[in-house]
Image (tube, rainbow, N blue to C red; front, side):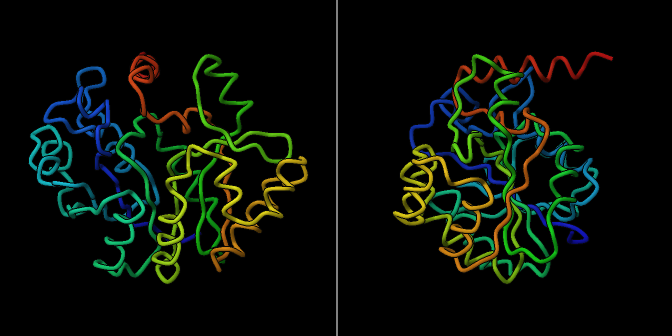
Length: 265
């Protein structure tokens, strides 16, 4: 495991994002959850985690996030650890732009401002699971565990070897391989909600194995590694809440319910 991770925290908005329209200043990262901007929960988790170093907040028109009074108050005690960068046209291109401009010396962790249910313990588990010999790692949660905790929530799953997996908006990138991984991500991010198109991107044989049920998670990662020219690893987290980002209005009461339960002594 790398000694520590510099964080790229993506806090931008997609065009016509419904949640951005519901938020102050039409910024999704500032969506109120229990009366507090959503991004604050992520910032608190990052600051409480063991393996996190500096934190770079990246967004389109990033000054809206940087100048928010709640954000300023949250980061004030650790202001030396934070910086703000202007993003690009998508999450992947924003990561690529930031990595090329900053030229980080160590490992990088990428997460998002719409990930308010992530806990320090789960983030620590992800970081501890990143081997030293991989170029990129992605956090996943199992469909069976997500459905057991949130039976009525709609999620997008990639089914591999009889199990479905959903992403947790957690990515680890090594400095040398990071830009290459970000470019590969930019090629497929438009297919992230279309599992079969995503699998097909890595080859017809990979798709056929998936359709016939012979492609498991390990095989999928081998296909991804070959296509990217990088060594990639999936880290399957035991906390299904880690996959519950806030993407749609119906996710708001779910997130608030989880956050409210955490407040109870």
